[in-house]
Image 1 (tube, rainbow, N blue to C red):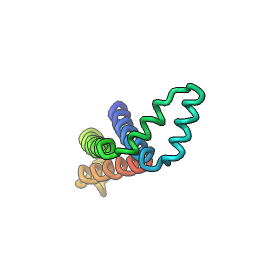
Image 2 (tube, one colour; image 1 turned 135 degrees about the horizontal axis):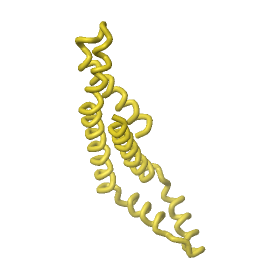
Image 3 (cartoon, one colour; image 1 turned 120 degrees about the vertical axis):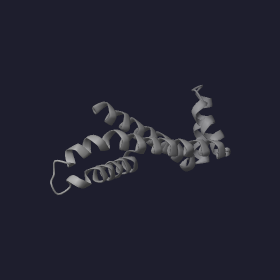
Image 4 (cartoon, one colour; image 1 turned 180 degrees about the horizontal axis):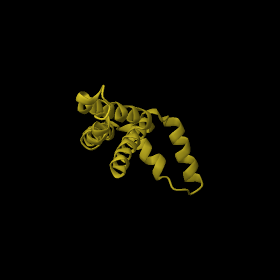
Length: 124
């Protein structure tokens, strides 16, 4: 069960990576990137980072579409994986509670979905 939780956390962090990538391109200022690029060229430092960011900012369509597909796929996989692997053991725990017993499957699945959604919003 611990390995399933780790896999789920990795998926949520991957979702966060995609979200950070999107925000970095959308929120970066062109003038700041150009200043950083010219400063690096003057000092013979690597210029790949600012150049790539400027290219992505100039034509963000394909990049942002790919990021959105990644966010959606990771979110779907996290929800499906979490529901399939964590709801069962949690339902077994809930079945021991007399007032939830007959609803244990539905309650555990709902709980798992809420926790995954919360973690995706906070970490992802």
